[in-house]
Length: 235
Image (cartoon, rainbow, N blue to C red; front, side, top):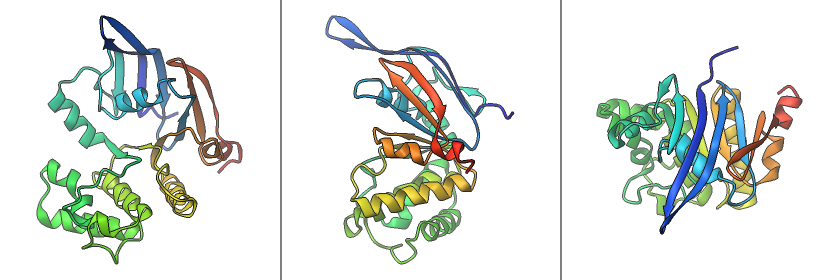
């Protein structure tokens, strides 16, 4: 078996709350392997969002180790954490997080810009990815000129621009109508078939049908870790 692409070891996360401390993650350990399509699920307040922020290098654990692509990123400083995020991860947000002043092509190229890529590379990669998500006719448009589904396609293309080890999605269809949401889910299915590693944080039980693995949290701990329907079907 391949080595895990993500390995969490005894991850704890606490926050100062007035004079006290609130602990959200209570020593969580988890391995995720290349090519998996993992849904992280659980009731409100179970720690999904906190875990996503740790996985996405948006927040540091209070204690424990987080190996991402073989590198322990658990306690890097902000600059090093940002560099690791740009090197290893693509992040897709529920609210898209596009820059309204930039065009589709320019939004897709943002991670490449921060990596120091040349203008020609940024244009070539952005155009190729825009085409791959069906936006070749919208290259010069700005986010306000796009539908919600089109904005999320831009966000997916942007997340792919640095060729990440892992794609993280936070309720990626939560702001979309059912038709647009279905189209985005089918795009994620295609990415998984291409060999991408996907981690989808959601409360939507329908996602169990699409993923290869379901990780359920409860009270900041791993409650259940089971195959998704796609794995059971052999897809």
